[in-house]
Amino acid sequence: MLTPEEKQRYDRQMMIPGIGEAGQEKIKKARVVIAGTGGLGSPIALYLTAAGVGTLRIIDNDKVELSNLNRQILHWDKDIGKAKTASAYDKLSKLNKNVTIETVHMTIDKRNVSQLTEGFNVIVDAMDNMKTRYLLNQVAIKHQVPFVHGAVSGLEGRAMTVIPGKTACIKCVYHGLPPKAKFPVLGTTPAVIGAIEATEVIKYITGIGTLLTDRLLIYDGLNMKFTELKVVRNINCEHCGDAVTGK
Ligand SMILES: [Zn+2]
Picture 1 (cartoon, protein in one colour):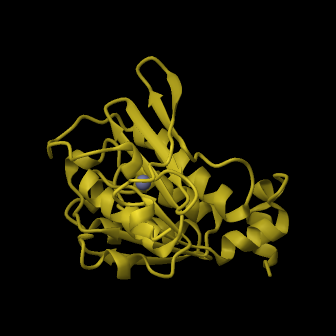
Picture 2 (tube, helix red, strand yellow):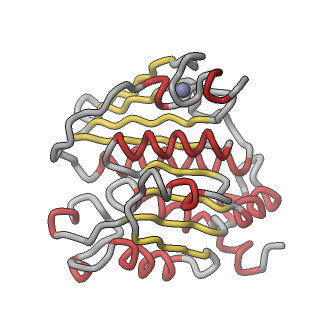
């Protein structure tokens, strides 16, 4: 049940056809894990907190640095040197007290990824490296929960939603690992892609609209164009192929 305060707070989104009070209750019950609380994680966590997602788990191993502040809008000047999870908790808990914010200051790796994401309804990619994205993709397939992927560089971004067992996964799309290197980012790029990822999460939870599945959305901010690449699930995929999932 929603409280009178919640009904007022979420009034505008509950007006959306298909959401209503029942949809808001689904959002309230949802448990979402966000891997990373940097450029992408900041808008994702802010919008999901504002929307009233019941439980948000935020995982990050980093500390706030001055060079983060052009894009990682959850972190401010006063937070330099603090753990990003602590800085995120500080802002998010003040934005919406109805949301339970769990923070995990840890590096996601092969050994802990399953435990860190178990019991959540959606896994959200807010990482800055492919290695961890692949781990999250695999664990989402293992737990049979959706994985919302996003990535940015410069003024370009990508997004895609994976529904395990039904749609293509990110390993059906990407191969190999790009060299680990510092890359440019304009702050508005993760804002655009993060907002798209948060939209996908809310749509999945409430069951409205059409998800960004079997399509890789490419945002080109420089020329202000959105394009889509059609993606087909690879039955021989290393992560979601029939041999791996035992179909
Ligand atoms: Zn796949």
